[in-house]
Image (cartoon, rainbow, N blue to C red; front, side, top):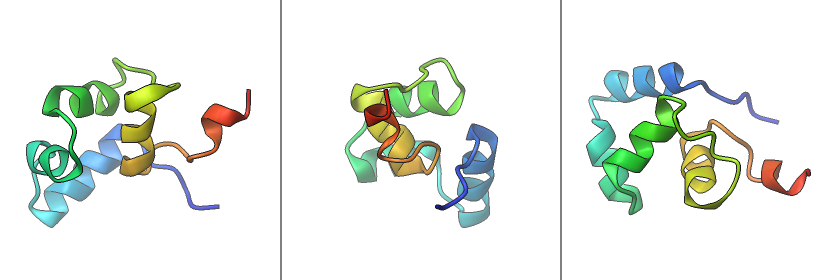
Length: 68
């Protein structure tokens, strides 16, 4: 199982790659606001689009929502 990342780690990877959150959001079909809410912990991403954003960012595994 791959190590899950924190929001700060994801942001650091974006900086290292020279990519903005807005660019990543547009490339993946999300709004920048939704991505920022997940990255900054305002949205806990337990299910729905926020959960999928967290999975795509490497912050959650894809099977976490089915564990309950």
